[in-house]
Length: 71
Image 1: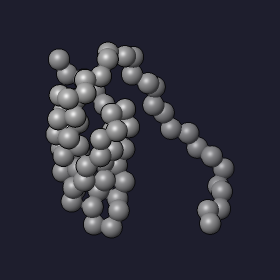
Image 2: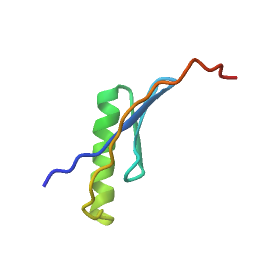
Image 3: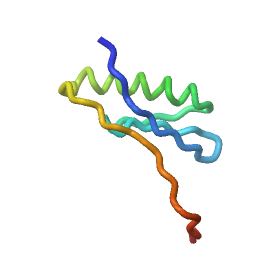
Image 4: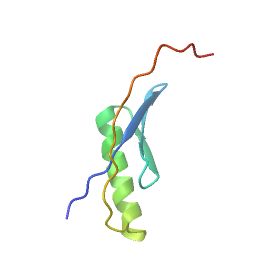
């Protein structure tokens, strides 16, 4: 049975860091595709040891704010 997870990807210097917030796994790669592939592997290994209960996935959306200066 396939399950779907959200990946958050950030670029840090030469690497892309991919995180699965639902599980807490993190991985990296030189490309977005490589980081997600590595995250999938890390998440599957984690879930073998610590399976999650079947739950309704959260709703993920984006929103816009007014332009705010960042220090």
